[in-house]
Amino acid sequence: MSQRVFEILHTSSAIFDDQGGFESFDSEPHGQSAGDQPSRVSLAVLLLAGLYFDSSVALWQNVYKDAQVRFDGPNCEAVHDWVLTNRRGFPWEGANAPHALHGADGCPPPLAKQLKEPKEAIMFRRLEPSKEADAVEKEDSQCSWKAVVHVPTGRLKCKPQSFTKGCALSLQATCGLILYYSYNYWVGGFELIKECFQIRRLLKFSVVGAMFGCGAVFSFLAQDALSPGSYALYAQSGVVIVPIMWRILFRQPLPVLTWVHICIITLGILAYRISEIDLDHMFDGIGLMWVALKVLMAGLGSVVAELLLKQDTSLPFTVQVACILPSKALACLLTIWLIPGPDMEWPNHLPDRPGGFFHDWSMWTWVIVFHNLGDTILSAAVAKQFDSVVKAICGVVGIIFPTWVVSYLCGWEDLVLKSSAGQLKMTGGVVVIVGSFAYVLGRAQNNELRKSQDEVARLSQRSGVVELT
Image 1 (cartoon, rainbow, N blue to C red):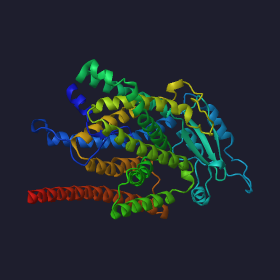
Image 2: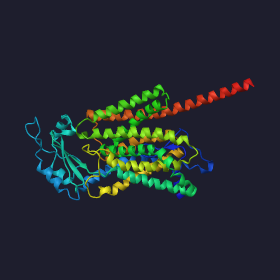
Image 3: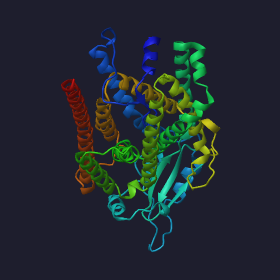
Image 4: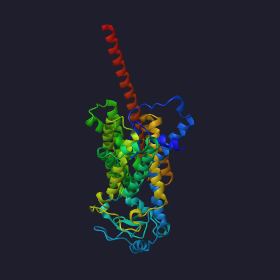
């Protein structure tokens, strides 16, 4: 069993993806001897497990957020009193009278029962322009959630207090580092371990680790601000950004059809975003910023990683990973102070809440860390056993199931198909998924065509040499 786990860690032709996992360099499955070929059942289980772990982190983040609000403790009396004291609303410039507070779905049941939202308020909030600056909030260090009120409409939103993302991801990167140190010792003893501690090599890979660390933190922050379905769809913007990076940095021309697919995906994302511009998503702007930063850092990290990892193919891949993870863990930790706080204060610091480094941790936090680490390892296994096309298709399928299906059934997605906004949202999502499938399959066919052309050119050159002799 332990040998099989260690074999999964060793993926000689892979790079990290945006979650700290792996993507294969090429579109060919990595070769194995006939005796080592796993069974079809094993491959199917591996693929399903990879699909689950790849899509589950955002879902578990929402389980955590719901649990934080339901916990309603350890002492939320101050927040409850503030809400009930101001239940008649807050004065608003231009309004004849303040709008009474309306309880939103997702608030603690005892409070929600006292703040029922009338039907006319639902229609009114759809027509009212949304500005985050129009909101007032109340929080307490002893309460697991904070109250946010949109003053013009009296809409109450109960936002869960969350753990510091850099702390959790730093711990996860450290656990992964221990696994790779263990594997290197198991394979090559102290001689291979020494390769992991060469200063020049650590410095060379530190840029990649820092990019992956920041990208992972931005990814967690985006998942915290967005619903699972919205995050999964907006993250597909990486399909647009990464090819453009490759076009600029490597000067590799992209086929016209690829640009068509990129434009289709972009239009789908825009349609999806337009459908979400209302009061229920007044905080999505910050989520989109985190998604953009995550895609940018992950794209740059992947490009730089491929350059560095291919420079020295004689060095075991597991040693290269062990040189990347220390800087990733450090970068995740430093984001606690380097990323501006909620009110754009900088340098930032850990919030003044009980627990310090582990503030607002619960059982679900450990579940999230476990699934993110599992995604890292299983991405390596999928990259080892399958080609990059299969992995990319699984990523697109994961948007539909489990992400969208589970998120919709749990009530995390604001999707009303009878409304024009809901229809536009569904249309945008379908366009993005279809465009992503077309992009992945089109790129695969283009790679096969290019390989065939190279083979024909090589054979033609060989036949010309034969004729001359």
